[in-house]
Image (cartoon, rainbow over all chains, first blue to last red; front, side, top):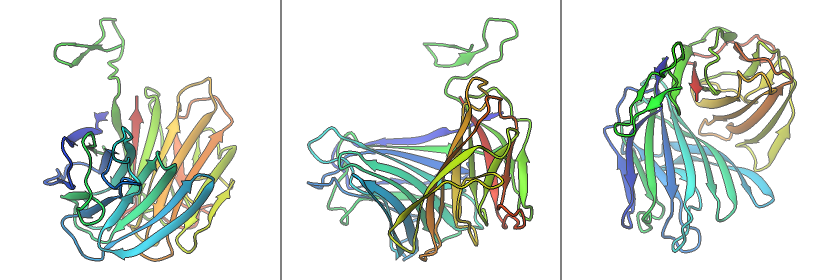
Length: 171
Length: 183
């Protein structure tokens, strides 16, 4: 059997950084998995992780999410967004809390279907847990992933934040 | 067991004659299926050499059910939300198999991941958990958790995915499934 789940690249933040870009992503895998351990600079809630693919700034992103917060559970969605909101309430500044997010970019390299991303996230400090399906309405293969902490780059990812990108290849 | 070099980090074959080479932490591709036009398909002769199985898929077009050589299942649970409202729902469906999603796709806008735990262990009943999403850029979208179990300690050697309970709707164009083994 062919071994897979191969590390592609890892970015570790060592000074406050507004954004991270994975470019020239190899097209040789079936799925991508991006694991983020994040702490942000927004005072009360750390910030949100946002994403654009292949530098697409058009209104081509949408999502549906189910979320638990304390004893409440609900779902929410957004259509025709200019970016994909991937995770809410990452670790807050001045803490050693780094929230986990796992993004699965399904069949990212095919050029015949729109792209879906399955994401699990927990803003553990604030007590939320989320599962989300994101649609990028494009048949282009994903070659670049651009991530930033919300508010147009005025918030940062704090040192200790890590992004690890893996490739999974089906037989 | 495999032997790992502390110097190089590489693995080598066990010194015990006949032992298989086992790579700790490995994740391997076992098989794929492209069932477009069919109402079901089966991963058969699954090797028993892994700890867990994972199925990753995209493009289902109805309400997929999972069954195995252990049967259609004993009990399943679902938690899901629709894009048409803020309420979340829970359901315990069981009909000809266990649902891994309660909402299908009209195109290639859905995907999911199914984890099947300790599938070869003959001392435990068999369980799975699944996460599925369908996003259409409209309120006709959904996100879904599912779990279920087979009340059997036998090993799982085959897995069948049926596109819907009636078995009358074919998987859509572009549907693909991939089976992986995890150690």
